Length: 243
Image (tube, rainbow, N blue to C red; front, side, top):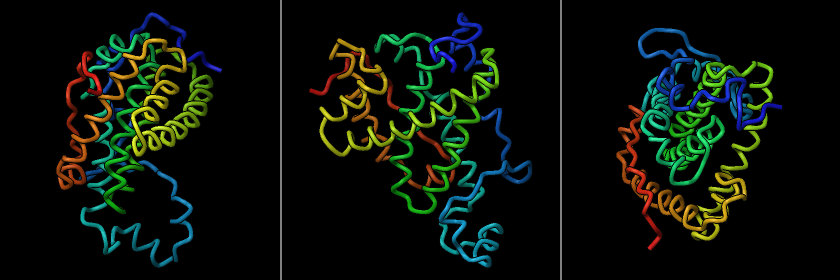
């Protein structure tokens, strides 16, 4: 299995790769034309009647506030906000994380999770955005791994491990955000710091950032999120606290 702290070219910094590749460069999507990537249906979709599935394929759901193709693009563009809109170096420095693909993934998935929490409030439209957001994330991770010289077999194995960790992270962060700061801090300590951080201030900074950012995202305009996938982020202040 790939050592997530290294690649075959361990001296390639993550920030070089993120500058070289667009967040959505590995995914083709359709606005007025183009190629639509295949995304497998969920179990719930498989159980729907044949006529309804046909109508959904044609875009006639009768319930969506925003066209499904626009929602799909919003998911892709929202993911771009989770990569291009973040200064990863600030997080690496403040949290004492090494500049590796693994560290980049941990910070990126944190912001993806915050978007997922916000979109889950928006019914069926939000679900569609979430699916394409996560789909794009994995496509981008594969592209970045390839750019850093990671063999395909190693990358696939790592993706499998990361997938398990990703959904465990969602459960852990979800529990933390609805409970108290101590629970959220424990989730951050386990996920971002891999249970190895002995500086509580580093954990507190990230918890304070998450709380502040979640409030900010909740206040963002729903129409802008669904139609354009536009998420803005407050700057990360390495001196912030929960007080």
